[in-house]
Image 1 (tube, one colour):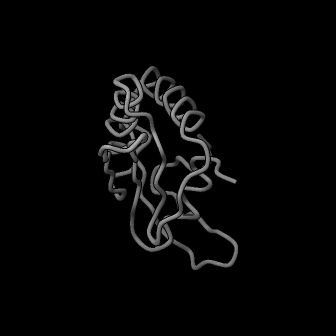
Image 2: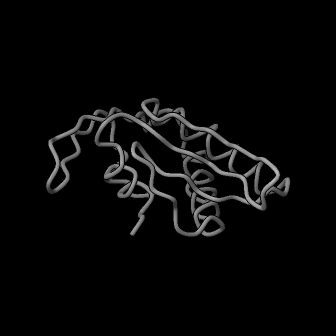
Length: 119
């Protein structure tokens, strides 16, 4: 996770986009929780591979096994504290994958690309 993006009341500017204000709360997690959140995020993104782009965010394929679903839930439980402007959904049906969806207000996709270091 890019710590420069993860600033309290940071005004984040992206090329070719209007300035967008996203209010993150880095104090929502203590140092140990932030460290664990970075580890969980890294592992989740490694497992998920390339995200599916949505009009207002991204969807990540996660396994339907218990460990993968618990990892996705652990990610959501912390990320929602830091970034309350995001909406999260974990969906599992009869397919081979479950989906973790992150969506938000206009301008959130460049923020998520930077925050999650997506290509």
